[in-house]
Amino acid sequence: MEKTLYVASLFFLCFWAKAQENKPYNYIVPESKIADSDHTIEVNKKGDTVFIAHYKGQDLINRSNQDFIKTYKGTPFFKNGWYRGKVQTGTGMEWEFVMAYNIQKEEVYLSNNPNMEVTVMKPVSFTMAGHTFRQYKNQYYEVIYEGGSQIWKEYGCTLIFSKSGQRTGYEAEGGVNEYDGEFLKTVKYYLKEGDRLREIPSKNRLFKLFGTKSNDVKNYAKTEGLNLSKEINLVSLFRYYDSL
Image (tube, rainbow, N blue to C red; front, side, top):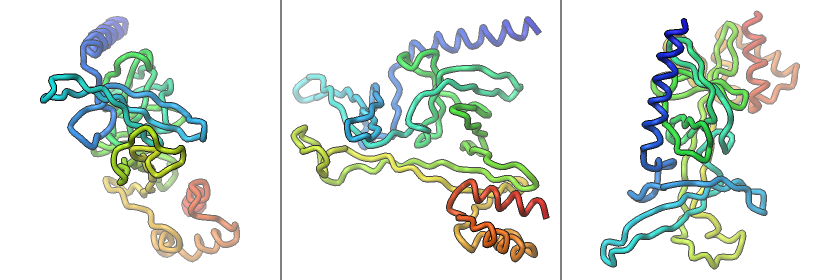
């Protein structure tokens, strides 16, 4: 056992040493071929969480370096930041790090300190901010309910760029050019059936999933006054179905 821990520790020490030699990582899918070299996450005086990407490029004509920033509303990260969490390996071992889950790129970033360069990993599963994610077909899902049924939650994130052109720095706060773009996040719910994920439809269409018990489940939802657009009520519905 001690030998196993020693080998594993040595592996991670080498892993981190290599990570510190890497160049700054591209955190978002950019609108150009210039990768963002660093980022900061802030809450502005409006109360918006913003992602500030720092870019470094070269002007080949003038033979000069170009440093500029772009500000996006929201972030590509789950819960908009870095959290202390744990990753699980295929062998059942668990490691604790400061980490962030980039929903847009389906990547997990690990660091001993959020101010240090990060290492990109695709662990079998990881836990952060009280949420546990599992990798399935190279994508992460949060399992929000496991009874007779299984409900898996998929997070999506798309960066929508501003259509109004480049910012000049002189725009009035709240104007159309206030941000260079916005990260829009979405969620979808799936029913795990064997090796297949079946998307759970919205509103009354979801009752078709329950087959011969659909009327019983529908009556339960009506009696309890369940708003099925809320996750907690969706879980309650499947929990009732599994009890029949």
